[in-house]
Image (cartoon, rainbow, N blue to C red; front, side, top):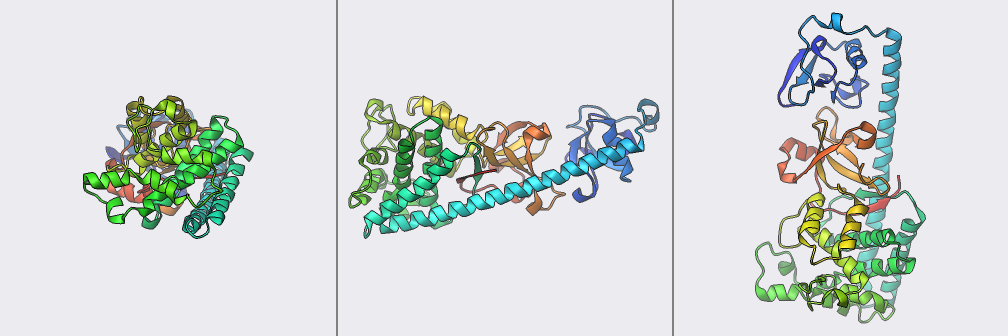
Length: 418
């Protein structure tokens, strides 16, 4: 803690922000850094045999007490009350640890499901040329399974996934867009048929990029005009991929062709306007822009999810369907998974999961140097009565916090259950 000094526990009072100088496992508090809320907490710290703590001047709401003044100003706390408080805190800490383990298991399970979906998608795309019927049927099975989860659960959680391997970027992006389009379709109360349709179209919307030379697709410097023109043809290349797949639904093809078209006519490849774009095309464009901003595929560096939502809300008002933009923000939360944040407690963390029924209260992995990285606490800020102060660009994190939180280079989401 910056601006901290080591002081006697007898000088601490309610409102002081402190750090305990002992291992996280050797005290009953959920955090080693916290603001003292009650006199009982101070007495409990004393009962642990702790004589000194670190006091943070900037995060405290009150000054230190003068030495040797506590006995006159604070009523004693009896031993039975302290024992009861410690027992309650130990139980709460144990419950939180178990909750964290459960969440980590849920993330792991979702990650395994996501990897299976990636594998199925690779297989699907590889079959398009030789066995198009099998390819489309496999994709329909995948989308049907995802739709079942979406429609049959009232308590879904959006989890942050691990980084994509270099060869899987297109597949990660396509799955991301597919999952989020289907989520928004559900939020918009679309029929199951429409949700499956946009999920299927989104799954194939970028396969045309597989036809573009990698040295152009991954170019870090400015593209030449011919290279830009080639990349702008990838929506039509995606459709060409599907020519032999006569079982691919015709209604899903416009959204593939139009996923870079804007309602003001400034998009590509044809410069279509709002009335020329169906609801599927308008929705996939919103999600595609968001995911591109998050993952830096727009000729610029990747933005945080929070910043990406802000850019879309402020700068795309004439380009994107405002209802769908609002629904995107409302569905995935103001602080989507992958957001790096600072809390009212002064701690830093990264949003790991968002319960879609409680989007304002995401689950956050906290940076705590006294806790091993693999056991990093994941907290529910609603339960802890902590608020998010601001979102941070990854570049603003000190190196030690960056290494601990390990922010994702690319943002991918998977849907699981608590």
